[in-house]
Length: 305
Image (cartoon, rainbow, N blue to C red; front, side, top):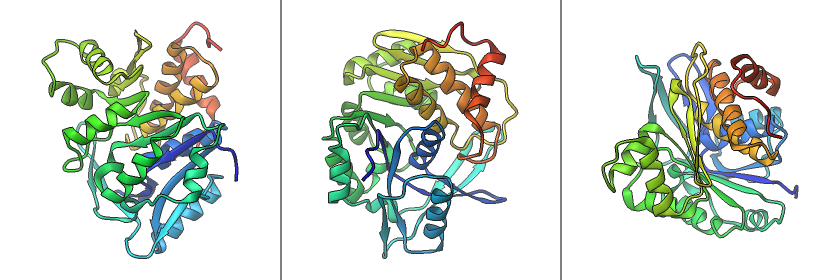
């Protein structure tokens, strides 16, 4: 078995848009962008024994993504999400339930993978906890020594305060958008600024790194007690599917390479913008395009490498 350095655990599905169907799911999107940046990433998920599932396998193999830990399900169909973009260019989603990825099982292959000494990150999302089967698998996976990366994805009715608090206590790195930050922090107090909200979550749940996407306004990060900011990158938006997932992959890639927090956020910001300018969450591109965006914007002085 390959010694992967990143495990992306969670949903794999089809984004059903009015005009087309696209492969998706945050864990698949993150894995795709990490692979584009030469990371040894493996996706752990579950598909139905159906045409949609086979198409996902074919696409992953065509793009060079590992399929070692993609489970098959004879009872539940491959996941689907019906997506549309509203007048504010925000995506609205109707997530089908239950589906195959709600039943990701714990097995010997996954256990062995998570014990691998070369594993650096375990990436997972809050949607994985919506069903007991996949939640139980996540609970076991969190025993790994890898750094835990939580990608918040609040989709009503598939979350609760209790579940999110358990997930927040589990992570070393938290990624969320500004709306999610405002909602979660409002459960505990009233805050005047985003910085106060972030610090409160960091202290309450002992999270050393929190990165927040701000849409067209860019992003901000709270890393080892210090705030960092990046302005938005002006692009013509095709859709925003997967732009946050690309952002996370860009940040992790930069951190693995030893880049500074400021550059890591600049790279993540540029990658998210590039993906937003293209249809779907897994468009084709070359990493040099990301660097070119940063250079054009002059968003940094040095790479920090």
